[in-house]
Amino acid sequence: MIDEHDYHLDTLAVRAGQERSQYGEHAEALYLTSSFVADNAAQAAARFVGEEPGYIYSRFTNPTVSLFQTRLAALEGAEAAVATASGMSAILALCMGHLKAGDHIVASASLFGASIQLFNTWLGKFGVTVSYVSATDPAAWDAAVQAQTRLFFLETPSNPLTEVADIAAIAAIAHAHGALLAVDNCFCSPALQQPLSLGADLVIHSATKYIDGQGRVLGGAVVGSQALIEPIYLFLRTAGPTLSAFNAWVLLKGLETLGLRMKAHCANALLLAQWLETRPEVGRVYYPGLPSHPQHALAMRQQSGGGGIVSFELVGGKAAAWHLIDQVQLMSRTANLGDVKTTITHPYTTTHGRVTPAAKAAAGIGEGLVRISVGLEHIDDLKRDLLRGLPDAT
Ligand SMILES: *Cc1c(COP(=O)(O)O)cnc(C)c1O
Image 1: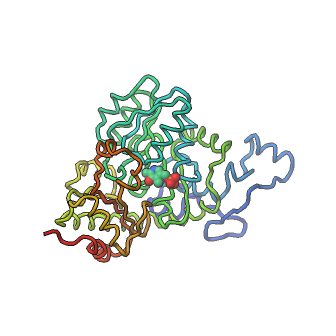
Image 2: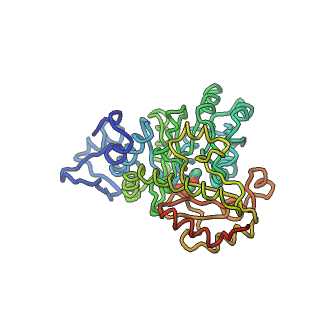
Image 3: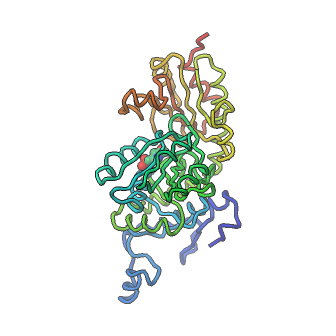
């Protein structure tokens, strides 16, 4: 085991938490076993009541999953992490661990669609209420607080308009009211942004996105202090939406290249965003790394790069957006993101297809908006691909 305080993120990503079995394997071992055998009855009893460390059953935890948790916690600068079957089960487990009937959440309006569904439909059944506010207006968070507010929840940068929330300012408001701040760090990953260091209490990941980064598995995690992770772990231990050992092993491989990939995603996305800004067919370009972005200065303080997601408005509206999406040959027409392969989507009719037109208008999601998750293909090939569906309007 290495001391996580002595090493840089790139080193932790390949080494933190490393342990070897009696065989001395170099790569991380994959423990595909549902349960673990005790030496005797006394040891089994001690393990079940938690008097002796040791593995019991892979729903509670597993050495490969534990290693992924340790490594991810090190990357976020956290005491503890608990891995889950998907990003959504991470958010569910956080809520089950920390909320009760009657509690209130303040959340950013521009959340991932399934997070809104989870809060409104499923937590709503148990009497949890939610107020949605602008991610970019800390005063709105303060104004939305009620006596029963227990949790602040935000994503930054947001999907698809890349709005950047001021994590430190919103954390201070949450704490002044005795609430916890949870940040969905999916768009940045710990390679670009460490919300705990800015005052957040808990960090959520959809490991399906940049942490895997190669479109192979679903996974998720919640990261934070031991005390705040414990109730989330206890829910998962009972309810079971935990990460499989196989997926944990794949995600460990993803973490090894996370820093390199994020640098390359940021570099490609910046070049693409700068080029899009020069195109006559394109109206606004939304990318935190551009000086024209309304929260550019905040983004550059809070993140070590602009990220890999670029959205832009086509002057020609929906017809132009669909034409572009139909003409590309290299980019994948899929709503997934955070992958080495570039993906392109029309948020108005896909990720936000079931949101009412009025709500889309309020959120600023227009019919001409296109979102690209910029992958690691060569930038010239990406530009050429867009030119297939982006004839010069002048
Ligand atoms: C994809 C995503 C999730 C949900 O993650 P899954 O792994 O698909 O369950 C949550 N938040 C954000 C920002 C996402 O992009």
